[in-house]
Image (tube, rainbow, N blue to C red; front, side, top):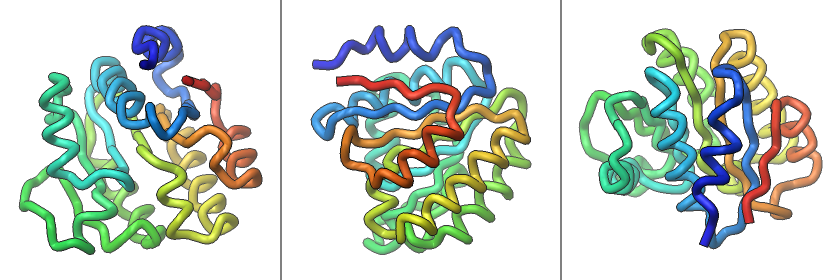
Length: 184
């Protein structure tokens, strides 16, 4: 069982534009992701969720169960389109797959412009995205996205499995983040 208060405590006093990497175990990743997105939606007016680990319908069910305000987010679903499991709604875009990095990047740009107020972005699984992409290509993609977020003053959170991320990619991500939080 994870300490949910630790997540909120680690995130609550950080500046709005902070970029954070949370590393956790495979057993805790779902619970950590739910708590992290709950904190982000409480602190911000709107945001982009990049979901590489769960389909949109499942995310919405889990978010609503935890009383997370889904009206504050736009979701890039990287998995449902390949499985013909997508529903039509205005707060989601079904991407071809997790290896469509150019399309993902363009969609982030497009929807970031539409969001108002304080903004966040959230990537639910660095490791799942790495399964579908070459590590160095993915590192360049993340470098570009994180730099764009930093320039735009948008805070964000990325989740990764402890000791399961390619070392070079992890080093690249960590140097671009304001803080790395380990949650057992």
